[in-house]
Amino acid sequence: MVKMRDVAAYANVSTATVSRVIRDPKTVKEVTRLKVLDAIESLNYQPNMVARQFRTNKTKNIIVVVPDITNQFFPKC
Image (cartoon, rainbow, N blue to C red):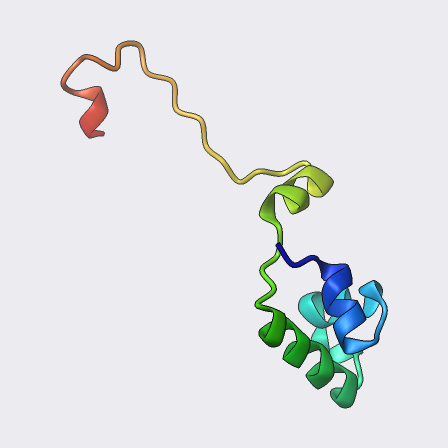
């Protein structure tokens, strides 16, 4: 799995710059932004959602509690 620091090393920028390109690209110079986006595409970088959830303490999961899952009504809801 490619990490943000791998993208930063490939583009020869800091990990903070890679993060800014992903979160708020307007704050980064055009040349640098294109370099980072090229590195992201070349390395096929995908953000690690587990790490993001751990850092932010938000999972975006919904828990549903039902009294009896074997009841025909509840599995279909």
